Length: 146
Image (spheres, rainbow, N blue to C red):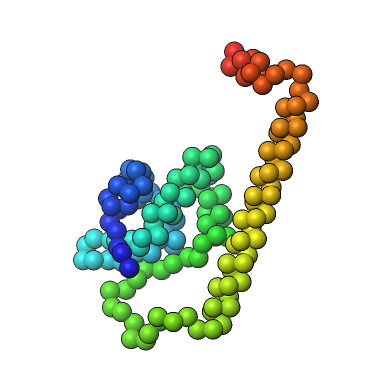
């Protein structure tokens, strides 16, 4: 597994390293972390996680909303010890594979539901715009003038 320092995550995501440290502090159980002496490094998944958190904040979601989103979409992780376990975990036992396939099916269904909901919302907005007497540009100008 690749382990990245906060500065490396920052360069890959174009998000300031102090912001990434704040995300790690706010949502520690979603970052895979390993200590290398005094340096903490994070699993490669941290790059996508940081991007997702940043996007959520950018869209106006609050910390608690993001925490709920992460609870439903991602498993919580724990610090990785320096010592490797003595047992071999390279293969996933069949019961866990079944759970994994069910989770993937659930994720796919959720994605499809979300896409359908987005299409409905866009159609409703477009229908509302068609019914409006003022053209879109005129409404924008009126809004801009306040």
